[in-house]
Image 1 (cartoon, one colour):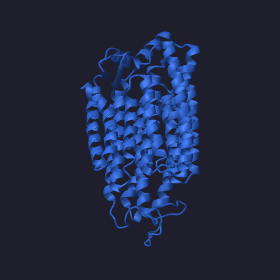
Image 2 (image 1 turned 120 degrees about the vertical axis):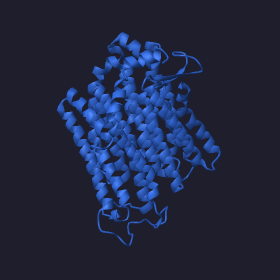
Image 3 (image 1 turned 30 degrees about the vertical axis):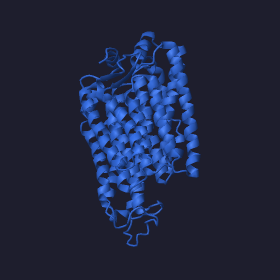
Image 4 (image 1 turned 135 degrees about the horizontal axis):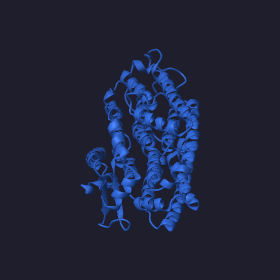
Amino acid sequence: MSNLLIAPLLIPILLGVFTYLKKKRIYVIAIVALLVSLISSVVLAIYSVKSPIILSLGGYTAPYGIQLYGDVMSLLFVIVSTIVVIVVLYFHYINQLRDLTVPFILFILAGVNGSFLTADIFNLFVMFEVMLLASFILIVLGKKKYQFKASITYVVLNLIGSWVFLIGIGILYRVYGTLYYAHLGMRMQEAGFVQEHAIIVLLFVVVFSLKSALLVFIWLPRSYSVLSYELGAVFAALLTKVGVYAMIRTMTVIFVPYQEMLSPIILYMATATIIVGMLGVIKYKDIKLMFCYQIILSIGIIYYGISTFTQNGINGAVMYTLNDMLVKACLFLIAGLIIKRFGIIDLNKKHGLFHNAKLTAMVVLFLAFAIGGMPFTGGFPGKLLLLEAGIDTHPIGYAIVVVLGTFVGMFAMMRLFIAIFFGSKNTNHEFFSTDQTFELNQPYNKKLITLILVLCMTILISIFASDINQYLSNITDEQYIKHEMMGG
């Protein structure tokens, strides 16, 4: 069973090479293979409920070999990431988009899944670089001038982040003599809080904050706004969430003695990020820019839960992140579908699209409530848990900022909903663009089937939230160390 743990990493890599060489039926091959990977991940997640799954590559155990570690949390992230990429590839297929992007999307998925499953911090760095190299290519793939300009900020900041990451890894190994999560956690708990070593922890906070757009977010709106909507769905759902996962894993397994020091730092950074996200979603009416600041806003809310360093706070952050990955992917895909089908470019007037696309309107309305984490959506249980933990741990004022950020995000989405769908029916189709990808009379409801299925996943997460919370509560730093040191 443990050998299956390499499938979410190996399958996307092989697919990326194979689909690049063989372009016929590229989407069918990729989607079918990823469905196999998804099924194997679900099976592994079920087995990991009893005990985490560990795979030592090459037969060498820690600290001499490479280990993959799968527990409920990491495998849930793998499952959701795979679902997102399958939906994006299907979106490519039904819209007959360029297949040149497919190999690099698959390489991003390989890096993302590898980041979730790795058991040592150096391989985390390697996986970060795999997905970043693929993302660099996707940003400039259109060869447009504005893409090259946006890529400069993205590349430079991420290279600086990688440089700081390597420095932190080097110092960490020099001080503690290992890079495995379990060994580092054990040795740091034995050493306790050492003031001189706090700089090491802060280096990793800077790196993961940069990767997840916590406070250091200048690269995100500039780079994500030049992407196509389908690529925006991949970037929004996966890349920033890898930084979130890395922060959660390292801060709850490795840097446990430094949680008291880190809690106020992460809290202040999260609050500032929420405020900037609120200002952004209110200021911008451009759909892509508004969605970019929705990402920043949700990152701040997630880190508010992480800053509590309590079981409910961490669990709430994990559950909210899983839901947010699905919601952000749906946001970009549904926006791309609307714009490609109807060519809406001006949001300063009402288009009355509801008369032409009622099902689309209902999906967008549901997404507006899902962003706010309203009851009966997947974000509600996670947000409730992290707010409860935050109120118990931090002053009430910070919780008010989180709640305010939630309603501001919903307000921006409702404003978008009104601009696109309200108004009188336009029989002359004045809101259609002249260079549409599809014919005006082409039915497109079938293109929403996959999106609706993904939305159903958010509802399922909400329904079974209590069970997920129970399983996540069993993931403690002590159990992680115990299982990894014993080889499962």
